[in-house]
Image 1 (cartoon, rainbow, N blue to C red):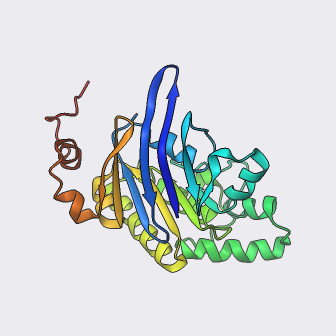
Image 2 (cartoon, rainbow, N blue to C red):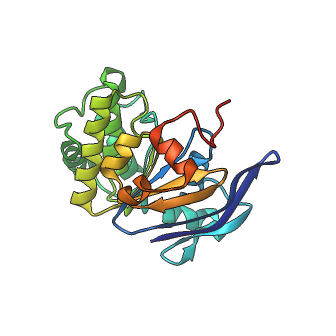
Length: 248
């Protein structure tokens, strides 16, 4: 569904993405792993068109989105949903208005129709009847669920997740993993996640791709990655301080 070819991007003379190549399969869960600061979030921003590469291309169903003008890109972005690391909820809005915000901005639905869709999506993520709660009344896990409800409210074809388990305890992280699996299966959506949470990755991934020094150095199924002989991959998956990845 998405083909990333030779993607390169530098900031202030430092190369962050260095000829990166990656294929994202339709209706699958692809997890991009790597250390903090390796460029995972930069890659996500390129996929959704928030950043332009220095060179290379990102093809969505054969269309190179890196060459699109802003108006055309805005149309393409409607095919995406995004779950931000912090949830990124609007503090001035209650839960229902947060989830319904994309519908209010981008559709002609009436308030009653929006409320119906919001209830449906909140129920989908296990939060029935919380529409009138304020974001500051929610736990960290609830904020992630509300963020996911908003990400899927327009029935996008692709959903991007930026570190969805950051700040959560292991039990809540596992709950979010179940939610990711349940919603992806029910909606048959293409999910792209970036994380360094290895147990979470093992539970949900159809495909794992490891980003290191600006390139995808290995990719494959969970079993293929677990059996990798690449010392960088093995060190990261095992969480060891000893190996070719230096700790500074």
